[in-house]
Length: 329
Image (cartoon, helix red, strand yellow):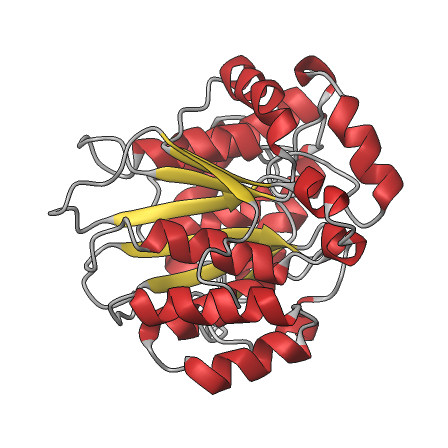
């Protein structure tokens, strides 16, 4: 691979965490995690590319969740939020306008230069995202302080769980060199991009940085399909994600209510559906009995859950779904 080769992507960094930052960094995929986007076909990508900001449809509750994550559980400085998307750089202005309309602040964004692939005749790479996302995440990681931890958000329409877990293992130093190259080859990443990713990984100072990989089940897949994947937490909707993040200490209780109210007001999700979401989140270990018992009355008072809803704690909780906090938290 020529030394001059770089994966064709565009990074825009508005603010980098200071060298002494020790808190979490939240990195979000945009498609089907924040915005409802058909990304598994070239036709879907083409339609997305010409959509205006005001016509883009949010994943229910995602803007509220992003704003609350940035605010954090306390009253300190805003927490870093980054975006990584397979959308092309030509969409940057539209995405920036969408962030403005939704009132979302962020610190950086990486977009995939799809046009460069087209010009080079690399059409297979248009729908190959593992190499892109590892390149983007590793480039960002090189700018992060070693002690900063990460929570990564993606969905099940692409290969986010695979890309994010490979990234976590590479950053930790458990999978580099030939081991990483072999995994990338198995994932269908072309050789030139494999070499680039392996080279980037070798520059990162090893750290147990990735606390969790949160996968939105946008395709309605069963969580059991992701069982056994290191650090992966599956969520059916943004309320379940908010519950899990609150349980792990990333969100205030009031933030959970704001996400639920947003899902009702902006997307018309019923109280009954949200009640089912709470019960299913508890059944899968996303939230404990103690936390559920404390949250449910507040969620009823704030109109998120039906007035008749009452949480009955079982005799024992399922195993916690959220991984242990990363080192340095």
